[in-house]
Amino acid sequence: MTGKLKLLFPLLLICLSIPISQAQHQLLMEEKVDDYTEKNWVANKRHYIETRAFYGQGINNPVKYYPLKTMGSSEFELGLRYKLKISPILSTGLGAGYFNQSFRVDTEEKTFPDDNIYDKEVFRVNSLNSKIYLRINIDPKRGNFIGKYFEAGVFGCWSFSQKRIMLTKYNDNEDTGINKSREIHSGLSYIDKIQYGAYLSIGIAGYEVTYRHRLSRIIKEEANDYDFSPNTIGISISLDF
Image (cartoon, rainbow, N blue to C red; front, side, top):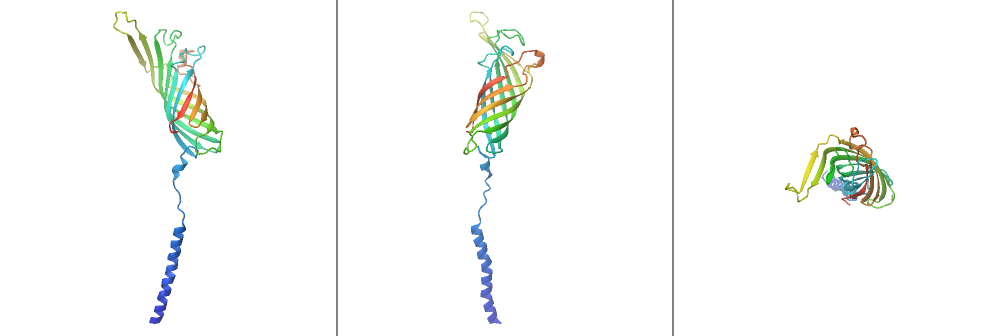
């Protein structure tokens, strides 16, 4: 009996060593799963978030709208934009950010909200805005970067601050002791807090040329035909490019 046990013991060790060696062999051949999902959040992958800045110049139409001076009437926007890639050609997305509008009035022609003439009169509207857009990529075989594209979207704004700033300069020869004065009116009830409109952009890499058209009024309806010019053209730049 003892001899049989002596024979069985080496056989038992051999049988036990076979599964261990097989397990070790499988472990060495196992491929590591790459769970690094951040690679999908870059310029030409499925998801992308970027910071963008926009500066636009107002295009005046003095016949139909409130008389503005082109120089000094501008828009500035700073915000985040999310892009969802649907196909190599088609993308869509959302955006949100801070929006500032500045309208410099031609005081010699205006009659609203009064007919006073100032050396400088500016309306400033500060808003939070959001947008949704559709993008058609022109170069679908581009590498991992933002290529050439057409983009069309709609936007909406909610204004949290509205100011009218009037600057008057005085003749130094007068005995007033004042060279100039600055008057600020805020919380303007005749400024509509809600705006909306549409835009078109042509993009190359991180740059865009954008035409923006506001469909809503800024000065409320009771002001009759007075309103700020709704057209803007400008440049948008990706700050992450």
